Length: 459
Image (cartoon, helix red, strand yellow):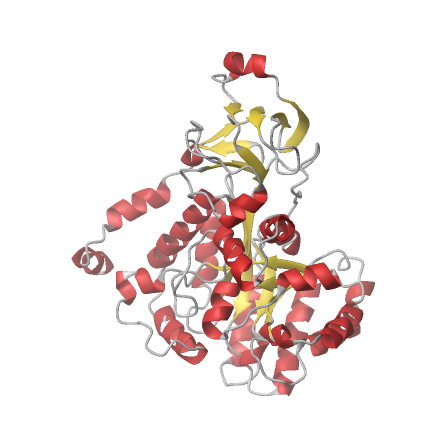
């Protein structure tokens, strides 16, 4: 029935499944020669030696050797291309991507463009989710992300009485399928209330079933969907308790512009009472907080108060400007937060092609590029910070191994080579230029993950 329906819309199910079952072949990289590096003089080229999944050496380029080794297996001739740490999705939703572009959901289109409508449309769509659908759309998101230079992602999949564990099961299959080319970190996510209605108990039971799976590494929720302050706190307490059992913690938090006291202070109190910093397994485990648009209206004194309250907790604020601007008209001022208050911040894509975020792509660099205008800062230093916000800072936010733009020996060999291989087009010469004018995904980005290059990204 599903096959006939999709065929009537011009969509080949056989083709989609054949694409889904095709594995990405990888080739071991031993050396990258003639690379330009972001924090070194742009008139110098470098040879990067790779051992296993680690950068073993960085040495001045030996031009005399290029012709001899460029065709050897395991050697990439960068030909002057800028080579940077790979990109990361610190916050992206796998299960509800591309709903506005899929023929199966043609009737679920935006009419008002607000949060309430987005929730309604998404819940209606979730009633139609099945394995084929989730794998097809999820695979598209991961592949587009890989083409953009992403080697790590934290993906949120919803758990509730509508989808039960369908989204989790699909995410686990996709995680396994793409593990050779990308780290897919799964967050069991409670988008609906955990304490405010008659289905709440069932949702908590389903969440615990999801969290029992080894492949589910993160627990998260959106406390603001609860019906009162008491239940908001109960939601956070329950999620924190589940996290302490051995999961990363990630909240969608303070997604509003009201003048009431931000929920983050209640969360900090919960973490303190739960003994987060006293638990030997917890102090070095990062906590991520997404959206937090209430903080976008903070005054300087508010920031100083919050900075002091955070203490030594390892919390990263993840700004989601494409979604936040569409729904709220404001977003976290991550540059101000980092530059003035030394707060850990990252940027994320969040949603792609649905009622929460109809615009935008899977490319993290497009979000960094947007940040130049949103934060009204075009300096080279700030542009480099925006790159790090979708690269090393984003990886740190999800607990993934990372390296800064100052690439060094011992760093993970997770890299992107930017620019065309033939060198005919003007190649970017700095990370700032990548942010100002991102190169085309796939055709102008070659990806190395754990010292391997995927045939999919070979140029």
